Length: 433
Image (cartoon, rainbow, N blue to C red; front, side, top):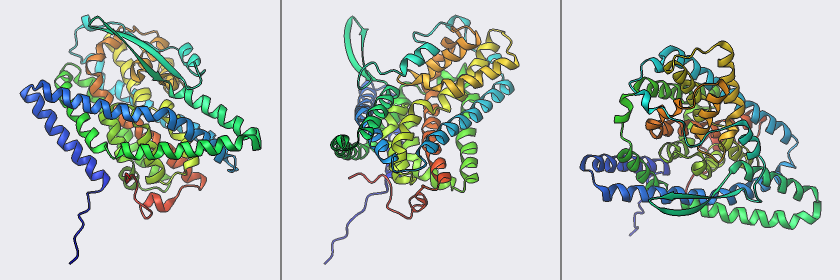
């Protein structure tokens, strides 16, 4: 007598189930006002994101050092890097153009129900000087300590700047390769460490359905959609722009390059979905890199470089659509005219300045950088903070999709994409072990 073995649903289906369960719990918690349920979902979601973020520094460092060692064997390594940056800029330019057109067409600043008294300067802002200083690692691993005071209690926590980690790891990897035989032992140890961290990543990824349920439930309880009423035109313009980029521009770019949009979204959806509920490109980074390699067929040596770089500089949601529409909103709300040169500056900041968001509160920093470059009042950012968490969900989903899209297209154009894996005829992606 043979015993029938029940197979679990695919990983993508598990995540979808988790999202549905979390939404049900969130709506129930919002309806009943259960503080216990809300706190439980919030804690579970934060623990899951914290586990992912814990793996980011060692994964990025070891993966990029390993990719530098592997890229030395590729004749077109420099061309891959150049093409990646060009595609980052091209897609950002398309996204910011869509944002400008929507801002002018919908005119959200003329249809706002928000009170002028809500205008206030944000606690943090971005500048070009901060961006330049942010490129230089403050220490070997780009770690930073910050102290916050809440309810009379001071707490100190460690953070990290991924862009600084990338800079440091590129330097270390290049040095290890350059010194020849003396660096081989270090590269072998780094490869072993990378394998260990990847195994840890798979264990954390196995918790994604639970983490997704907790995060979407927490979002439903905390934010809801009621706050959108006063800024409905603005929120609508943002989500319309995000939808056009995600479901029109990206599929067109994939189709033009001979890639199936359906296959791309099927493989990348777990990362896009996690980005939506977690609101963190950095927290989603390990999953984004995993789906880019295992699901989309991008070679590990290239993906290990391109995806972390994209997580800090490739932000079509936070750094292109959002600041473009927001800047137009602020100008319209305060009755300040924008000229053709101003729209050019918006595009310039979106294409060049998105790296200024690395390691910081991305959307706020990028918005204030755009407003200060245009000479618009920074207090306008305070008008938009009330609904920022709701908008941030869509922005991050588009960011993550773009971070997987560009390496896939570049790899395809360079002839190094594993088409069998992309088409789904190889081993399935994201099977936790």
